[in-house]
Image (cartoon, rainbow, N blue to C red; front, side, top):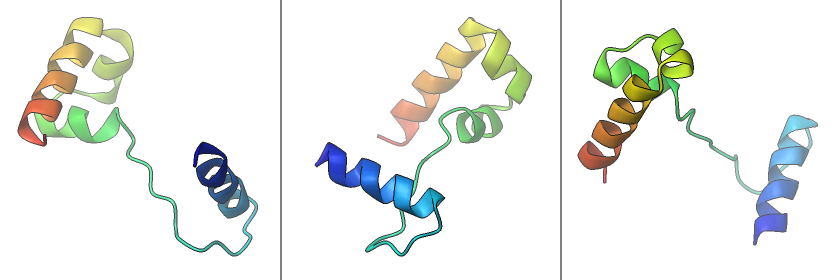
Length: 61
């Protein structure tokens, strides 16, 4: 299954036809916006990153 998903991502990146469009969640961007932190906060402040990740996981579980 992993190999299938990886192949799909690689094919999509190479602009080849795929059976389904792979979707990836940018795990920093939405939680940052959702919690009011900046992207810089998410990259450089581990405490804010952790708080945002926990809030995101709890609210969207």
